[in-house]
Image 1: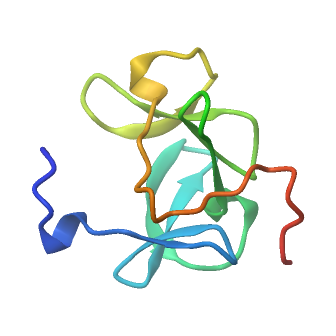
Image 2: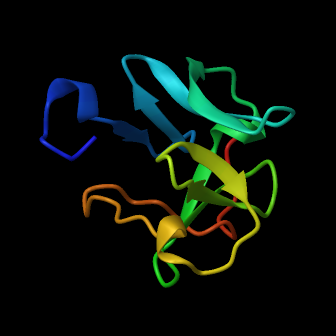
Length: 105
């Protein structure tokens, strides 16, 4: 869906925990089925995200794959290849520290 700044398109970034949140749930990568969806927050590495400002790639702490938009506009994790379907623009108000920063556990 095109961005329209509707309430159903407003997400929050919890910098302390590295969660991307919507309606109290966290963006989650379900490893086995490779699904990206919102799920109850549980603190697992598959819900903790970081962003590379240079490459514009989004990864979670569960692995080295990149968040990727398939042709049908579904999100999944895929090997990083630098394509436009793996580039994301984060709001300037979101401070997504590089992975080298120590994380609270």
